[in-house]
Amino acid sequence: MTQETISTDVVIIGAGPCGLFAVFELGLLDMKCHLIDILDRSGGQCAELYPEKPIYDIPGLPVVSGQELTDRLMEQAAPFKPEFHYNEMVEELEKLPDGRWRVKTDGGLVFEAKVVVIAAGGGSFQPKKPPIPGIEAYEGKSVFYAVKRMETFRGKNILISGGGDSALDWTINLQPVAASMQLIHRRDGFRAAPDSVKKMHALVDEKKMQFHLGQITALHGDNGQLEGVTVKGNDGNDFQLECDTLLPFFGLTMKLGPIANWGLNLHENLIPVDTEKFQTNVPGIFAIGDINTYPGKLKLILSGFHEAALMAQAAFRHANPDAKLTFQYTTSSTSLQKKLGVA
Image 1: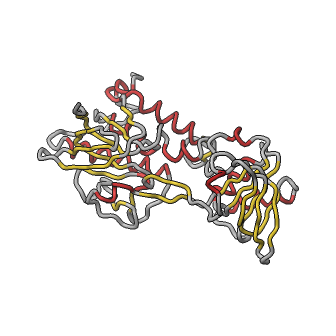
Image 2: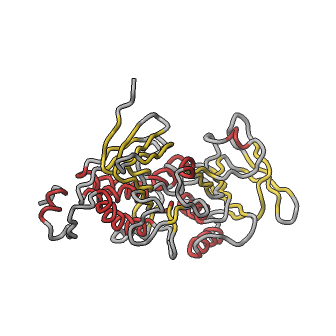
Image 3: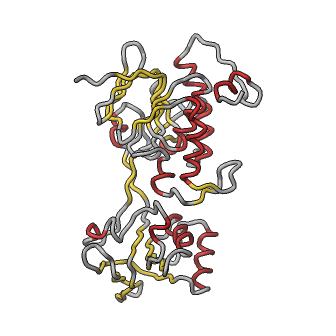
């Protein structure tokens, strides 16, 4: 049975915050969107890696969790009836004679669209694993590379390994729910926000947690259940730490996957774009969010929202070269308010 081709105005690759806001901006211009994501739900890294972690730099929202931000963006996009295709990875991108793009996924879905928007974050991401022998046997049972629900760790004796923002943030956020909290890092310097480092040291001073210098060399425990670890201290001597849960935060390895084969000019696994249209070197293919690069680029969600707004204007002009585009404000345009269902 031949897979039916799905025809649409825009295919958005990636259903993270930038992809979701792009639905809103494109919808205001009457452009229908289908979104494809390798994950099993919307939200990208926000929903997958830190759904309960607070985000503090979204304009107008002094604090919002990754999941709540995703939920609000889904609600904002809902009037435009976007269609989502989860657990799918785009494998092929082909230019058709009429100027449209044919997009094929690894699950056999086929799309034809006037515009393709790559909002794939850093591509598909996976955690960097510490080089500890036999760690695979503990993964998913007592070793975890992400915190999806804080309640999962209530009452646990937690050891966090790492010195970046994720390690410090989760040390601070999980300490109140843990039975005990320990942090280990190979040195006393951190690649994290100074305020987080200060808060961590305060918890140590208050004897609410412990901090150790060294590197984990071995895990102990049967049937995937951790009981403790061996640490090589900075003085060269080994010592033991008791714990039943290990959270190693060594960062993420980003893999572009098939995107690398689409004829785009890549720079260090990122896609260069202009700052007028956020278009790639290939007309009709745009890139927004963490996947793109340009002079002065900041990898912030709010920057991606700005990029989505300008991209949408350019995408409309690319898809409708003969149409007149009148810029309107949602606060004063009756037609835009009707589209949003608030008129």
